[in-house]
Image (cartoon, rainbow, N blue to C red; front, side):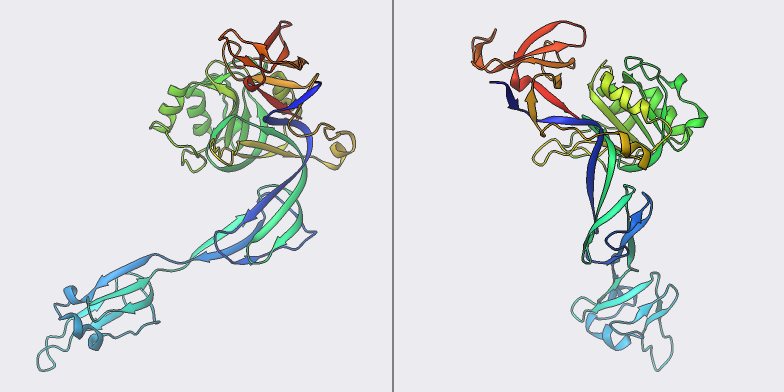
Length: 375
């Protein structure tokens, strides 16, 4: 058997990538098919319903709930501003009237004679969706959003936190196995995507946030450093909504792990270019990995070729990462794919493959213990 299939992470100089930019509720699409858009261009917008604000007028005006309707100065559907008189009691013989002045702006949605409450709906909340990826609009989803296509250099990571960001790629480390420490972060890295090498330290990430970097990408990270940076223990299967001031992406895994040479070289070759990054990670059903997207210029498109490999295809010569001990985190190439199952040290049988490690050593591991580095 000369080939097999296994899941993997994409690391490629060129791929045609599409991203869907969808509104949370129906709204207005602002672009058309064929339009060229920048990463920060707004492509769709809508308005989310405002907050619901209950106001108990019966209590505030010391009235029976059934009397509230008669005291209303505004009616259902009326727009209210802060300071507008909302209701007024009849008083005694026309004297000693009590008036309630609204403390909120919004629209009256309901008035209840049972509870004596009115319901105000706050101002609609504008929501705008940007393109995220500079490219061409190839599909418009009516009232929902768009699909944007671009030829990009594409790197998927293992884990990330923080959402979408854009910035200029800048190298902080000179080698793929160099630890990313705070002294390598400078003020000039403001608004940049900082590329490290091996483990990124807590101090380095904190320094990156201080100087105003938009993202940090490196090979490894200590789980305690992640906890210290977040201020809590991350125990969820989905990330991306953390409000921590920047996006963090780990390309290889947790611990003292160097970035794969291939990944480091690709990112270094794109230094100075604008990248779109997203730390969102989902590790259960519907796996989603953090990503780094770097649009190609017309000149780069002319000489960068797309990979001819089928996605997920495991064959001789393709790069893989070992994801189980005792070779966890090591990178190499598929050296052989024996057809027959072999007996493992545990006594069980499994299909295996030979991996020629970057160190020159050749090891045999179960096929389930590797992931393909797509590209």
